[in-house]
Image (cartoon, rainbow, N blue to C red; front, side, top):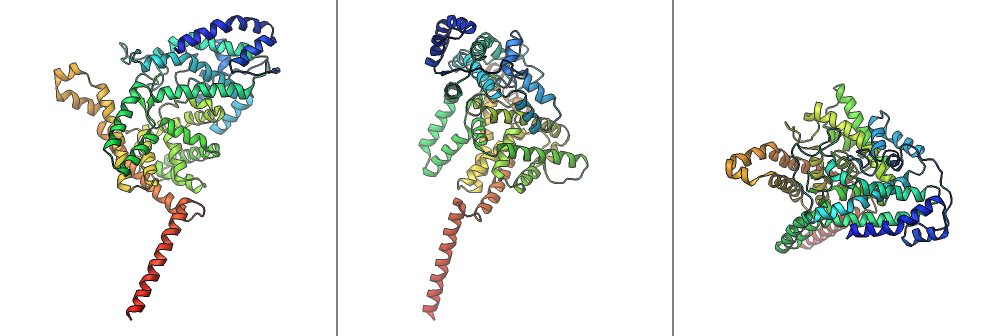
Length: 494
């Protein structure tokens, strides 16, 4: 249906595009306005676009194999390359990018719109089971050895649609004034529609069905817990990353980070804390585990444990995986990506040189996945903050990793091999996937999350205006009343 709509749109608009490219006229403006993209009057935009523009890169390199960048499809190849090669602080890189292209927010919106138009038919086909998730002989085609990047098999078929859409917007926007509100609303709607499809895809529906069954057998407290887990885990289809089937935590973490008015400040504090720990560790001057050190530094800078956990959960990912987030807040999304690549440089050093010094409460012989450890912390933190016991919070963190590892195991098992090799084959897969280590990440990551929640709650109890403060005052008032009653009874007894 989406493909038919796209074909229809191009059939109707392409003749007008050609006319509009030569000379703008009122009919052409009306046509764009009717499609909800622009509004009159138009005024001139600057003719020049900087080379860092993802739009300009596509126009200048239409046959490049990375016109849709596998590591960052909206930000684009030139920007990712610049960020990764630069040795400057990410805050300075971000400012330099903005200064190089004052229209970067518009370019990012065009890039996202083009990506969504190109990939929506592919996503529809994937959700209908028409796209193979079995890797070809030799594995998925990746770039720069990035195992978690989008395989070219997912992107290359969409190149023509992507390029045509990009050219359409560029040809008719360049030299005119974009009606920002109209255009951004259009892009935002497209992003929300794409996101809803990701969240209701067939692979995700299986998890939703399991959660529905859990709700039926749950008592009241359990139902609230299932809903909380559903909200935080925020399952979505991993497509176009066909090497995975489901993403977890991503949408929720991004939503929470993008809400922050102080996002730029907290990212800088966390990055500086990570850099400081690395410098001190190189000189053997630090004895705190990496995660504990960063969280403590962030709290001392005036932020909360929650802020630190969320930034750490984002910064320890394998890939930024930002796309629909550019629909609402393009510059904030670019800020996150700018910091991501520098965070990842630190993560790679930690995993190679200082793995034993990273995690509180346990020394892992094998890397459990920094991201999996921190998402376990995040889940336990939120469950504890929601009023559940520490035991429940930690158990939820463990179960989340058991579910993830079990899903990964079942996806890897092949029926013919099970028939041939039996249980030994299953055990071998379990060992290779680090099942036990992954569950330990849930155990000890959950412990960190609970401890952070306890500290935050204690601090909030002393902060007027917070729900925790009001609750604590009511508790203290009840204690005072109980003491008065006891004293009265004692006096009467005498």
